[in-house]
Amino acid sequence: MNIRNTDTSWGLVSILFHWIMAVLFLGQFWLGWYMQGVKNLLDQYYLYQWHKSFGFLIFGLAVLRALWAITSRRPRLPDEMPAGEKTLARGTHAVLYLLLVILPLTGWSIVSTSPLPIATRFFGLFVIPSLPLGISMHSEQVWSSLHGFLAYAAIFLVGVHVLAALRHHFKTKDDILIRMIWPRRR
Image (cartoon, rainbow, N blue to C red):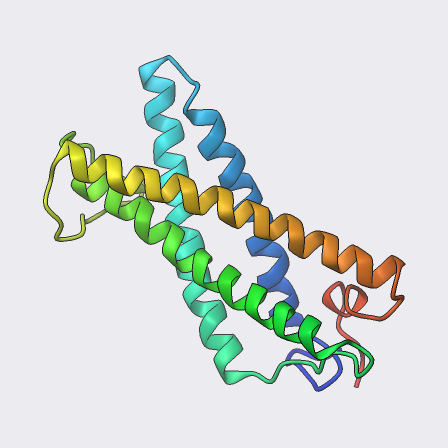
């Protein structure tokens, strides 16, 4: 089993990054949506702390994943795939990578500009310091709106990504989806 990517297959590290981050992102999206409807302040506090902690975890993993991607080769896309589709696939991947970094940063900006002095405790282990941004209700609302917009944009792109992978598997019958599930042997 390959740990690193090859010209024809994703390696185990890339596959693990992909699926762990997929689960974390989908869970984080659901948690962000759910926690907004919680009325009990204590429950709301804990849900927000979990959301912020997972956001920082995603941010850290996204940076590591980007470094891994920069230092690793990417498997070739199928030769029969049209050039425009290849460009679209690469562009979508780049935007998804970018969103996995920007979304946590906008979340961090929300709590950094909030007039409410509520510390961000990373899974209860330590406090994450605020970014050096001005504190105001207006700034918090701007960052919050941007964070929400980007979250919905990201979930839309994830949906497109999933549909494209299913199309490759069931309609074009190539190995695009399969090679992201399990690494090939050398």
